[in-house]
Every structure is written in C-alpha cells, then in structure tokens.
Length: 69
Image 1: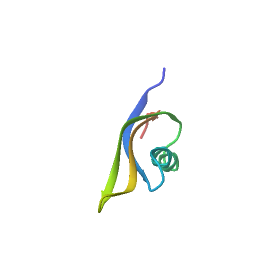
Image 2 (image 1 turned 135 degrees about the vertical axis):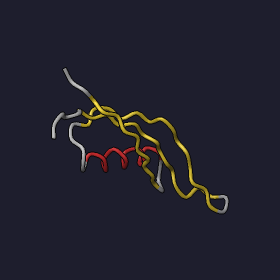
Image 3 (image 1 turned 90 degrees about the horizontal axis):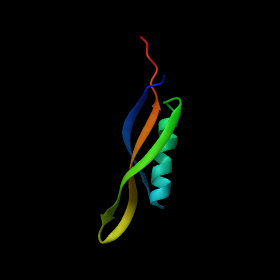
Image 4 (image 1 turned 135 degrees about the horizontal axis):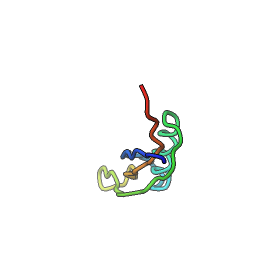
C-alpha cells in the first residue's frame, strides 16, 4: 500500500501558462521525491498598466508520503 500527499503550488512565467506550470513542478522536484501527478487547477494573469506581465498556474502536485521520524 502507498500513501500520497497533495500540495498546492503557484508557478509564474512571463512567457506562458505552460511555462508557469512547468516551473512549479520542476521547482518542487528539487526538494520533493517521488512526484507522481500534477493537476493544473487554475490559470490567471498578472496585469500592469493594461498589459499582461505574467502568467500564473495554480498546480496540485502529489508525491509519495514516507512515514518516519
């Protein structure tokens, strides 16, 4: 049996929502092991002076929970 934990992250990019989601997952992978699934829940944009300056993706990421300590 396995247990997985789910956390929510927000990635951002000046290029695209895809880059924003990828950034969130790849950054999480630097400190979390055994990432399994990422689900994009919400997309939005940051706007300044009428122009889009950043794309943001809210992502739920699951990873295997390790019991211990």
